[in-house]
Length: 591
Image (cartoon, rainbow, N blue to C red; front, side, top):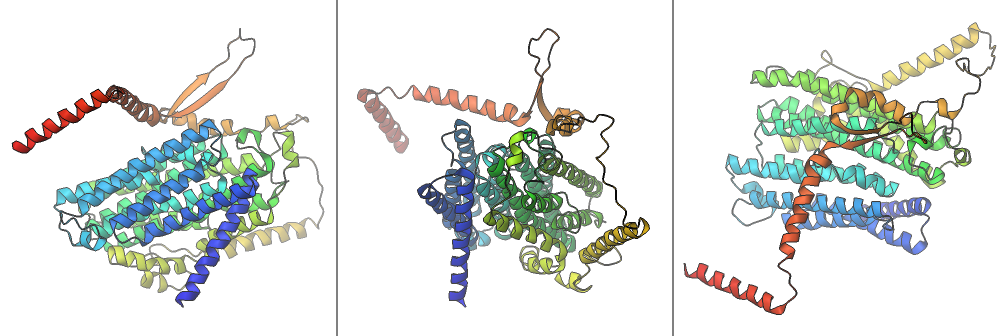
């Protein structure tokens, strides 16, 4: 059995490497040697993520974690000849090491003075509530940096557009979940008994990240940057579920803690399939057209039907529409808040409905962003003449997109089976599961607590929708006796419609920019009557970059310049430093 599993793992790695090599060669047009080098880095990235999950001590965990960061850095900077990509890679590596420092300090606190860094020793350590809180906050900072929580998110919208699309799919779909695994491991396993108010910190960060990410996703004009901000939104929803799980577990509501944890883990699976599918879809579009700017795309469903229809599955999943996977995870998360009663404090009783309303708003805005993403790229008329020569995805691209789309559909149609598989994790972390509850109503009906309170059957929903469509089509055909008359669409009285007259990405996001203008850093250049060449330009920036990161960068540069004065390049000065250091150490030792 072990040998069969090993052979299966080797075969899966070889197949993944082959698909990745082919996809990278298609997108980058690189030679055989460069493709092999990228394939090696890809497999190293895969292996390091696996080792992160298998590590049982801090040393092995940090080695695997840093290997994952370095290998992904080299993949992100594949096109290192471009200065913008080099800057994005540097920012990613910098933030990765800042987060790793937080994780390392968290492990240092968790060992509790025993200086044993195995996870078993950390579980046995007895930390005071103050030091346990420090360890949790350090872990939340470290893993939140890798996950892309706001305000530690700045690397993510830069690294994903810079990386090749298969790498972006792997980073967003899988790598971000290693951070989720890490914070779950520290909170529920190594610390053991989290305090309920810790959940409010994670809940606030997660909810703010989800709201912030979906707003920026709705106003983007670059398709990969839009998906990167969408990943921040989904990670925010995951950490929202994580935070409410801590709250329920801390106050002794184990049923609700298990339900929120199931919703969180379900959304992790959903996001892995859905966002990988969307990034690979953008990769196919980029390979066929050479364009990432939404303002230069459009009408590709005519020329790339395979890519369009499979990408539509991912967009509908990201929008949270039934009967796909996105609806199940978001529905479970909302049920968690709706079922909440009799919390120990009035503050929590007031907070939970507000959080539920915010989650519903985020879900609605996510659907808005996905309508913009799919509609601008694939619907309407081509905005550039070269788009008429776009070709559909290759066989390998279709295989990659099809199996991810199948995963989105399967996770949506069979939630009871998926929850049964997740149940082992929930029992391990919160000592309670939902398998018996969901199985009590059969595999067709999903009822998180009881049928009387809430239930959902995706297969019945799908059959009802299909029957309604079929009945409508048959009724129309019978009533109209099959008569059809094809005419051009109504053109609003103007017969010379062009692609310039259809909605643009900027126009689609304008209502969001106006309603939530304080959230964005907007700069406008408006034309004047005297301009020989009038120009209208709007740029949307991130406040955190200008409020937090640029001041920190200036302080670091000035400090480095002052420290650099010590490097005189003269051996006599360096010997003087050594002599003064020796005298200082001797004085300290004598005291």
